[in-house]
Length: 229
Image (cartoon, rainbow, N blue to C red):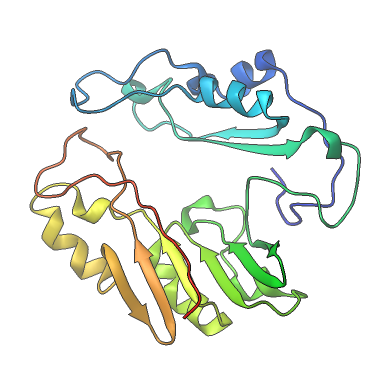
């Protein structure tokens, strides 16, 4: 996918048949074997249909390459959605659900929130660039950066963001990685931390990486509320 510019392209809605061809894991009917019974499986296909009902349509898709045949059909996948009424426009205010080295301005009354997103370093096709995210951006009352990997916090702080939201670490997921993760990601392992003038929040998330277990960590769904200081 070419995500150098996330708004200025004309799009074609992808059918379910196309999604099934390009990313079969979207249509997995159940979780991988040996997943904890506490894990609630939600098929991506159901989410796609729910978004379609709300007039968001998929316009691009990618699926992770597999290293083990046991993961075939259960790879990570990324979908890009656009509002149905904006399919054939090149308007700079088109709204999308994927943010890769780009930004959007969210307005509420006179307040302006800049929401930016950078690619993960593992993406490979382009590098995370927090400065590119805000290039040409208008003034904003608050700047929020979405960065999957918390190790990108120095880039976000240097670019002038106020808050970075990250995941990736799973808080170590299970012992002894709950200790080892601190060697790689400290001080941005889980929960709140600081990077210069920027606040960082790292969610432990609900999923797993590798063995489908958690030990010594708790899964979480995080609700953050931004209020005026």
